[in-house]
Amino acid sequence: MNLVMQACREMDVAPEAQALIPPEATPQAAVRALIDAGRHQAALQLLARVLPRRYAVAWLCQCARGIGLSADDMAGAALAERWVREPDEANRRAALDFAEAGDYATAGAWVAAAAGWAGGSLAPPGQPVVGPPPHLTACAAVAAINMMAAQDAVSFAARRAGLLAHALALLGDTGQAD
Image (cartoon, rainbow, N blue to C red; front, side, top):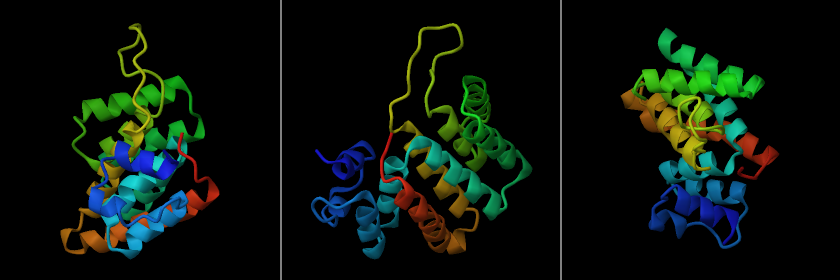
């Protein structure tokens, strides 16, 4: 199974959207096909999964800075950005702890969750390692982008499309999920 179809299955992209992707399409071409067909949620799901996790978290941090989040949301994004700049266990765990403390209720919590789920263990410190599924960061990214876009319900679709377009350049740089 190719990378695009595997990512679609992992992210539960609707079969109708998957049918719009040309066979053997590159990740960038597949995302572009979904955008061109007006399937922005499916494009977001696919894009979030085919980006390497660190790239996806960096994208979320850039979006958070540009969209004008609350101070609390920006605190979560700052923890995620700290992990992007220095992806060690302490920074990952700090982001995960922020997301958990916020009950995953805000955009900032989801940005932090994306970093927190990018590796390491989901178990409490000192417990046996329970690694996150590889697509969990992408799931958090989808939630974060949708919550950021929904801050202005009237322009939700346009805002989400703009945030999605912002990441296409990152996909051109890598094209490989991790």
